[in-house]
Length: 340
Image (cartoon, rainbow, N blue to C red; front, side):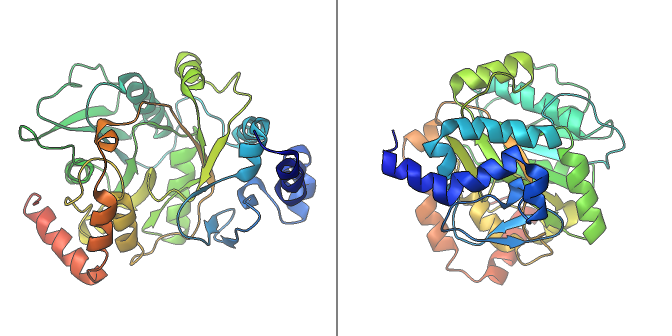
């Protein structure tokens, strides 16, 4: 519970600006402040094309105003959803895209099935959604995927840990379309997500972009409600609204993905492989900033993280290698079908 002093400070430094955006968005826009411009008091944003905003600080962060006043998180989600509705309504006239979802295990199956449905709808009639399962045996092959959904099994040796990078690389190699969406299986995006992102890439000749400006992290009851109703009805408070997440969801041209070597398969489990990939992606035409909302569906902590993830130390060691050297090494590993 925030102290009175913290609440007053948040009102002066952050909540007042957010209230202007939520209560009088047209007036706020006249002063150059849209919902994409919201951030914490000590943070600074850079401007990209249109409403894209870049976070000019390392790492990710959470909006303090929503932590202090959780009702603001619910109101902010409602506000952004008026511009970018969250639904499973099928979209039309969307450029073909191949969405790649790396997965292992059945513990997140309800959320996975929901996210696949949402991506098939948002991607339009030509989209494919590849559920890339890296495991010792296929556990998700029996699911009746919607039109456009496709299960891809990547065998793991007995005792081999989940390798998210290996699943993503296998999906990219199997993809049928020239535009890839690398996407986490627990992230629900608004209906216009694919169409808006693909259009912006085409307009600017970008090779890649990362659309998610704000990620709304739901709790377990809120997630159950979303899965049951396919809507955000009833969500009144959200404490955790994240910005500047290095992973989650990225659009990248397939040829660009292969040219920089895909994801580094030296990472195992979950985490930090996206930071290293982003470092190599910055050598190409990556659109500066992000501009869309997304929802993170609750799930229990993966066993790999509960056991203690060594990937952060591995990232530190790998980043000591020159970026050009890493690109060439990843390209060789990818061409060879992956290596330790």
